[in-house]
Structures are given as structure tokens and as C-alpha cells.
Image (cartoon, rainbow, N blue to C red):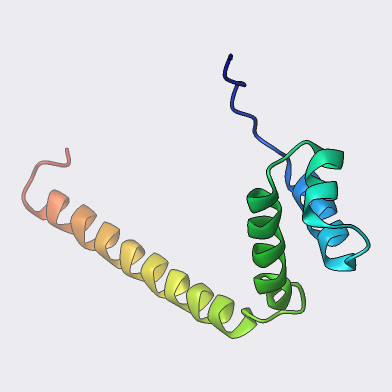
Length: 96
């Protein structure tokens, strides 16, 4: 018995399989045979699809805004430190 080479499925394929599983028109075994994947893999993709559905409608919008503000703050700090570094470089006479 030979082992099958590990496969990487695209996001589109995973979404297609998860949607088919959510429709409940076929059993997991039938879907597994149809799409040539393990039933446990279909369950994992289905669970991830359902859990990630909130993000589609902006569930993490507040968190994204917070991250943007944090990035802006860090960029400002980098600019300040760069100016201080340049100033000290010139004052100490190494910037000739």
C-alpha cells in the first residue's frame, strides 16, 4: 500500500465543500467520496466556515480600527526616534 502525496486544497475548494456540507443534501461519506477528501476534513472545514462567517459581515471591524490606530502610533514613534538618532549623530560629530 503506497501513501498518497500530501495535498493542499485551495480556499475556494474548501468553501465549496463546506457549503455542500451545510446544505445537508448528502451525507459526509457521500461528500467525502465525491470530493475525494476525508469526512473529518469536511467537518473541520465546515466548522471553520461557520465560525468565520461573522468576519464576512464586519465582525472584526472594531478590532481592525484598533490595530490601525496602533500602527499609526508606532509609525509616529519610529519617525521621532529616527529624528533623534539623526540629531545625536550630527551632534556627536559622526555625521560629516
